Image (cartoon, rainbow, N blue to C red; front, side):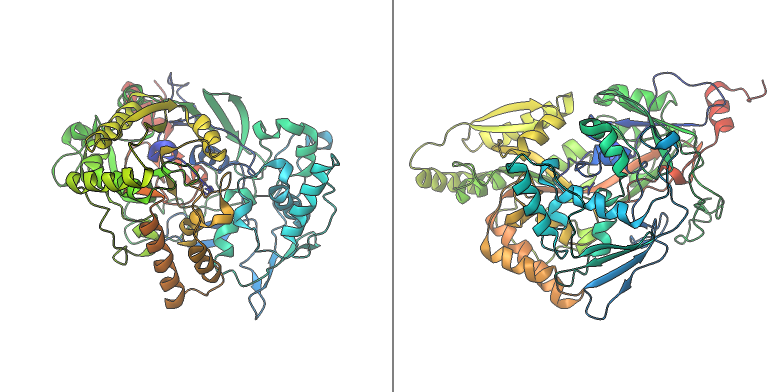
Length: 598
């Protein structure tokens, strides 16, 4: 999303943080404008596995639990659930009571077009959709082996599919039961300390069976959720429009925050019903220059800062330069739990079998130069996959190959050639993007490895196409990364668990039996020193085996126009638009110099 999955996802910080619009709307329009730097692939939660899609779908669909909007570090609270779960003494049975005021959006799939009440059976049905092999959900790995009877249900769907028979969703799953309309019970195969974080993830939202059956294969482009916004329009590849859900339940703006939130006005609307914004328009702007110009014209409510613009905006001490500060624009800097890397396909006969080659490439990558050149210093060099915000630091990791050393890289390359049995072939490096920045990035990687004697062929493709290629294990060497779906190291470590290989989240197809054994112990171990030690051991194995060259841990820099209120970017949570507010009168006056009455 990460989740979604996150789930395997591209890093594009501004995806959920920016806005745009080609023309300013009518002066009294309560509209929020958002820019996406890649096309939305799907809106069906069962198969959403990238941040771009999640940034839209997260505002349409609710989950059992949600993060507190203003509280840091990330902390869960009930969403559709009426309260936190009742947990059995052995940690295996979770009983969850549901709110009775949650309804699906009005839609043609329902009798008379009226959305019905959400019941516990909707969760049973929706989670079965994730397990159903015919849906090709990349998110099954989140629950594989975790819930009693779920693997058996997946096997059943496989057998029925192979036989050309329909899947009967009445087939029971022992560990997932609707005890009554408003009580869901989950029985685990073993303790799972991170279960609540996992089911907060977007794929575990309730979907109405009526919608799936009514729309059939079109369900991937249709969104019938329970959230504060409804899908009004989707022009594939260019524009998505959401409108306020007029039947949204009473959901009050939070009254709890961090020190300083009150002084910033972030608690002024405490207790008031959400959402505040009537309409949200997402448009795709892949190129940095038009994206930035829209913000400069005041047609963007908030924005990330393109790399070529950064030095004109941010000055000494990481402060906003006077030109922008005088306009009331605010610079927000915060930890963003995203890690970037250059991924290797471990099934590839060239890069996957040759550790010395991967080590040589790692030594050829100047992480400091990369961060300065492409992120204007907005990050720190990475050693392993887990972002320090989630792990509490990364001093436990050690590697002689996560440094920049051209001579050492050349020496390693000779080892790689000896292992290969002769000169290495040209490598194929793939970028999920076709804009100027993507090309510059790819050319930088090309130059970096050519310095040590490797030839590279660049292949630029749009993000959805690259995702498909990754899912098919068809790439050799590519740029990738991960944004945390939930606030636990498990969400990074499951990227290297071998049963999760592509099209699952293990996009590098890494396999190490020792890692797998540690991971299986880790996921059932309660939070504490023992679990932390297991995490450190696993991550060190990944660093040593190097299925990826880890380049950067992200830090986000975001700009906000003064008319966008209640704006506090959350590092993990999708679906924050309901908290935000547009001061329409202030926006009109600042853009035109006139009041709404004039």
